[in-house]
Length: 244
Ligand code: G3P
Ligand code: CA
Image (cartoon, protein in one colour):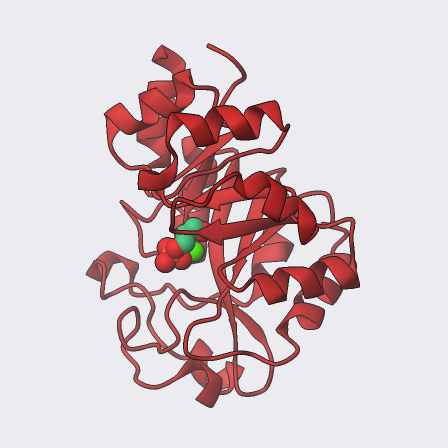
């Protein structure tokens, strides 16, 4: 096998735990994952919080847009029971809470800046400042489907790695990424074709496809020397890697 493929736990150990919660991140650490992938949005009072959707409706017992709730309001919500009643104590973590926890381990931190319907003005600076406060510049990889956001992160602090997120079969995306200051490719699994994996490897650009949950896909990408996979099932991926 070429280089050891890293395992990034998607929203934590999301296959077995409520996504984007501390219990899910802890499970990923215990599973032996090398890194975490998680999503960041801003509350009404500009606190960066870890949640995938722009509303709290799907993953908590509350309702409404993250941008319309204060951090204090959001912190009262149960972010675990939707997954299983045993997780009723889980809450939406602040990014700072996650960084404090991360200071006790050495996991890579793939922070996705969310940009769907909402464009959070100033989110890049808020996040980059917090990374600086916790001295995490060398451990964080910032990714986004909004590449303007990545350009802004790179302008604010070029020492933080940025990764383009994309869903389409782009031609030689490593060249485009380099042009905007990004140094890695986070692509949708179906577009992680051998030409892309090989071309990126030749260019020295890491590829980390998402979301890799099937055993056959895990094995194929590991054998192909993919830099990392982003998976909901880190425990399974660690086991497969040990046999591949
Ligand atoms: O970062 C990879 C992946 O998480 C992007 O899609 O919707 O799961 O945030 P999504
Ligand atoms: Ca994500």
